[in-house]
Amino acid sequence: MAPPGDAESVARIVCLRALSQRARTRSELAALLGRKGVPDDASRRVLDRFTEVGLIDDVSLAESFAAAAHAERGLSRRAVAVKLRRRGVDEPTVEHAIEHIDDESESAAARSLAQRRLRTLAGLDRDVQARRLVSLLARRGYAPGLAFRIVRELLDMDASVATGDG
Image 1 (cartoon, rainbow, N blue to C red):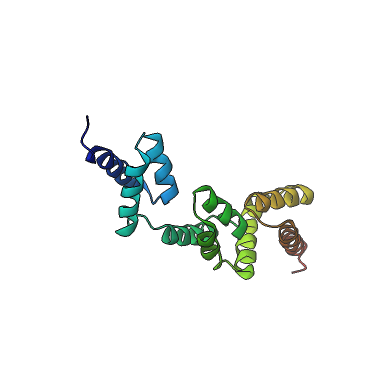
Image 2: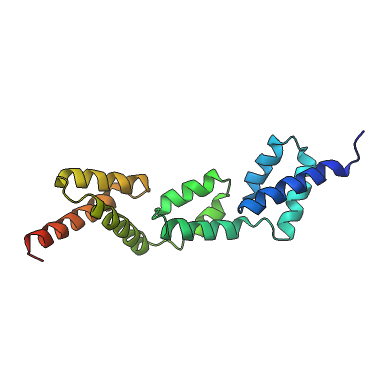
């Protein structure tokens, strides 16, 4: 019979290895421990201890993930929330993490993303450009109304520059 501390030792090692690769949510670590066959009671004790000492911090992870996903990848509030929920972050933490993404920053991120992509679409028909840009924004989680408005503004601005009107 194995000593009672063995399951917890395995759980600690598995968690530390996973956390050395990237930050993980408590839910992600619990699922990983389950796949490794660690008993639930040992898993819970290790996860509680890691949370207590700050190695697992879902609030901090959610906030930094939301900020980075929005600023660097151009994801909308809705897309960030979906990704956090998939990682097992609870709803109040998700709501807290995305509250810093306001309508203005969401519009600016969508516009920046579409402007960058528009450069690669030069020479294509305006309808093709519009379709591809709206699709891009939709994949990043932006509402259709916002996506169409931004694309229309960018294409109108691009057309006026091309004709010398602006």
